[in-house]
Image 1 (cartoon, rainbow, N blue to C red):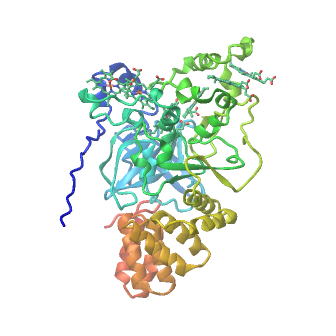
Image 2 (image 1 turned 180 degrees about the vertical axis):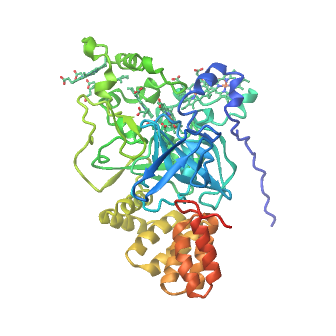
Image 3 (image 1 turned 90 degrees about the horizontal axis):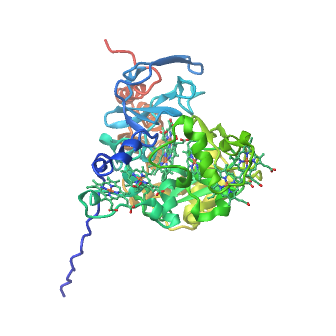
Length: 492
Ligand code: HEC
Ligand code: HEC
Ligand code: HEC
Ligand code: HEC
Ligand code: HEC
Ligand code: HEC
Ligand code: HEC
């Protein structure tokens, strides 16, 4: 019998065209959007770096940055951050992107170590720039599949947050063939998804099986792609750069107003108010609902008392406005009860999603309750690459290397070439059994996917030596030195 396959009708899928294509027909919006922090949130370094230098006490090094972005023998190529609060810098090495350990802090007006490097005695230049980092700050990002931090050249086609991140892909619309998504006209859950894709992080963000946040388009439901988890007792206080959505959701204004109040009630997504107008601009927004509030003119700057600014809890992100809109702001936690338990803030609370969230938070904080809960939940799930690698990692931490090994192998089989940590850790398992050939193979594979992978390089050197391959070991040492805090000495 012959099986006949019907032809499937391919629907034309709109693609991204970039902001410039919108300019002709929407010149006013295009022009004002250009100057917003979102539009300017990333770009190419073009001889406009603020020069400066500083001494780093922990390492004893002196870092000097010049206008071209030259620092410690490296050339900074891209930046992230409009510079309102600060700017992170990246540099490229053979098609791979790495973060610089130095950051420009605009509010302090000086260069200093990047968050997380403060106490580092050898601040290496090997921190990978993952697509996740660029997702919120750049548009049309072009990661190379299978690598951790390899990108096409250029790594992103559009600086900053492009129009189409909030309006959907525009290739059809620019030809007059289709309508764009207008967030304000979407149902409230889809509408709020548009801002939440970048302004919400939670304690853990978990992609659903087979889904990638990178595929989300304005108009979609964010919860079809990812689930977000928060601590049941509140997220330990403090305001985070990506925590606006959670704080805002806890406000009386939002709870009592429901769907009619959302981010764009107070924020014009295409512009920010001039400094001298901001007090009046936001007061007008408040008074739309609170005509009766305070007749006293001394109380005109509503923000100063009800939405005060506080130092960000996620270091380096600067000073942020508290969106909990409290009667008597304390800047503290919304809930004081401390708990290790997580709950979904948005999306599914299935064993898979919840288990991965516990694994992520548990490993980050070292909390054993969370790690055990992750193992309990993930053991019950159907295996996919993510479940397998998380469970493998947790079991390896408990010394169960046989189980871990099988899970890492499964992760690689289920979704080749597999998660990078599976490769590095398989190397460690083989290395601990003195199976050096096998271990070296895994570590070499890991380095191919990220040439700055430090654990793999550091492990490789003694393994190669153990096999008498001193020359190869020396070459790995040399690659490692390329990431040292200060540049390797020039060859004569
Ligand atoms: C050739 C002219 C043209 C170009 C180019 C163009 N637009 Fe439009 N746009 C229109 C017209 C006409 C309308 C009103 C009719 C409609 O909604 O399609 C519109 C409406 C819109 C709306 C409102 C939709 C609604 O339902 O409220 C948005 C949002 C929008 N455009 C975004 C964009 C973006 C983003 C780009 C660039 C990717 C772009 N437009 C490029 C002509 C254009
Ligand atoms: C693609 C990611 C992305 C999306 C989508 C997004 N934002 Fe942003 N937003 C950012 C980033 C990144 C910044 C920080 C920009 C910077 O300073 O570098 C930011 C900054 C802001 C700011 C601060 C501007 C200032 O004065 O400093 C406001 C307000 C804001 N966003 C509102 C919104 C609203 C409202 C929506 C939804 C309609 C939205 N954003 C959607 C990524 C995004
Ligand atoms: C989930 C989305 C998200 C991710 C991922 C993310 N950021 Fe941000 N980032 C934001 C938002 C939103 C802001 C703006 C907060 C504000 O304006 O208060 C911001 C602000 C910043 C700023 C300060 C910008 C300014 O206002 O001058 C820097 C620098 C920065 N991020 C760097 C990074 C780097 C480096 C990474 C990757 C390692 C990263 N961010 C990952 C969303 C994100
Ligand atoms: C951060 C998200 C965001 C970005 C980026 C963004 N918009 Fe919008 N845009 C919105 C929202 C939200 C609305 C609806 C505002 C409302 O009605 O409250 C809107 C409305 C519109 C409209 C229809 C209403 C009007 O005012 O005419 C057009 C056209 C439009 N945007 C074009 C653009 C263009 C062009 C760009 C890039 C230059 C852009 N937008 C960038 C969020 C965004
Ligand atoms: C869409 C309408 C809306 C907007 C806009 C709005 N609020 Fe509210 N707000 C409410 C509602 C409704 C309540 C609950 C009133 C009640 O409980 O009786 C509330 C409650 C409050 C409370 C009391 C909080 C508490 O802990 O009891 C304060 C303070 C407040 N708002 C300040 C502001 C400020 C400041 C702004 C502007 C930045 C603002 N609101 C914008 C609707 C709004
Ligand atoms: C009730 C009004 C109101 C609503 C609703 C609101 N904001 Fe804000 N937002 C403010 C005020 C006021 C500021 C401080 C502006 C200033 O100081 O110039 C601010 C500042 C910001 C900033 C700039 C960085 C900072 O911390 O100062 C970001 C980013 C931001 N809001 C994001 C959001 C997002 C995302 C939402 C929706 C989840 C949202 N806002 C909803 C009033 C609001
Ligand atoms: C100097 C600080 C300060 C400023 C400025 C201020 N408020 Fe308040 N507001 C308070 C305090 C304190 C309370 C709590 C009063 C109480 O519980 O008796 C409050 C209470 C409120 C409430 C709750 C009213 C109620 O009856 O529970 C609202 C709504 C509110 N403010 C809105 C505003 C708006 C809108 C503005 C700007 C026009 C503003 N506030 C400016 C300090 C301030």
